[in-house]
Image (cartoon, rainbow, N blue to C red; front, side, top):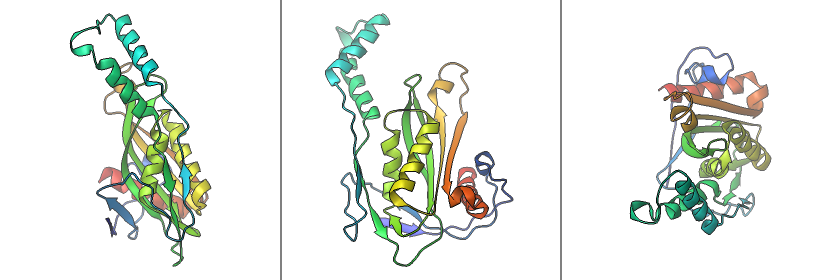
Length: 246
């Protein structure tokens, strides 16, 4: 069941950059529609009018037997005996975990006609996500803030979370992931504008190399009016920034 409410947020001036937005700067804003769902079902829901339901499938397949053997070979190469003891089932578990990490979940992008002509920003904030860094096969974990300015259609709000999860499943870099989410929403929804900001902790920075724990990487993609209209851009960045620092 969906629950909706509005919030009133305050802040200072904004200079139009995503980094400053994460500092919570921005003009006073009116309430905006936000959705919280206690459960996201796995079955795609049909569109209200029989239109606008566009599927996003996964074309990737995983050879679990080969993956399991590869994990076993890696552990042996690192000096571990996987023939007995607690490591016996580790190759199978790791292969299954990686298969889950890199296999996108198909879903249907459900949209609805914007009959009332709603033209203010729709924003879903702080959606948790995780992905795998393609350079070190280590996770990066964070939150996604996704907003859009509606045109002729509205999107089923849980589908914004599903779009984030779909593109996060795989070997990724955060910059590309941010662009993929925004471009997909722009293509399928055709809104007046789209904004996506991702904040994430990268294990390849915190657990190895420079060992900078707590460092966050912030990336943004702004399209349409979110990029070209200063007022819309500032509103989006301010709403996201107020959440990030609140």
